Amino acid sequence: MNDLLDFFISRVQSQYFSGFPIYRSEQGGFFGEYMKIRLLSRFDEFGDGQALATLVGLTALGTPIETGTLYRLSPTSQSAAVLDRFIRSIHLLNFLHGGQHYRPLYLTVSAALIDEVDAEHGRTFRDILRRLDLDDHPFGIVLPDTLTGQPARRDAIAASYRRYGFLVAMNAAGGGIVPL
Image 1 (cartoon, rainbow, N blue to C red):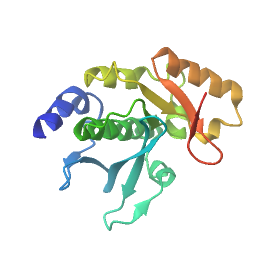
Image 2 (cartoon, rainbow, N blue to C red):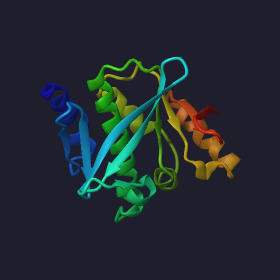
Image 3 (cartoon, helix red, strand yellow):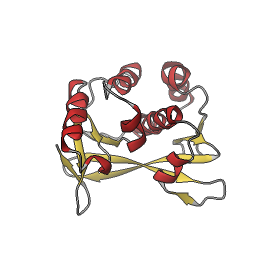
């Protein structure tokens, strides 16, 4: 398991998240830390072997913290986008560790990242996948609900993610996700 963490640190963390610590949990998975908040992964299965990776954030006292609150704590807009990618990378690390065979694995992106990145959505995350030798695995991106009322912007962002090989979805009104 240390080999996996060393692999991740050398290939991804050192390039993108050097200021964001990663730890191995007592249960064997991995978690990140951001402003003393523990960032954990949860995988919710649906459909034919598909899954959605979601964030579980816990304060130092073990109290859950809402994802939106976590992003509002980010001191600068740049750190919000880095935090978003760090969270998705923690999910990837746990995906690699757990040996899950989710096909595809969907990962959410935050409104903070969407607002900060002007173009080429998916480019940086595709590079992270290449560094982890996950380029051939199908991954989906779940766009934030804030784009629901902005169909032209949503479609342009979805097209950019597709250019980088991602499936794209939105949250469904009754729960779950729906492809775009």
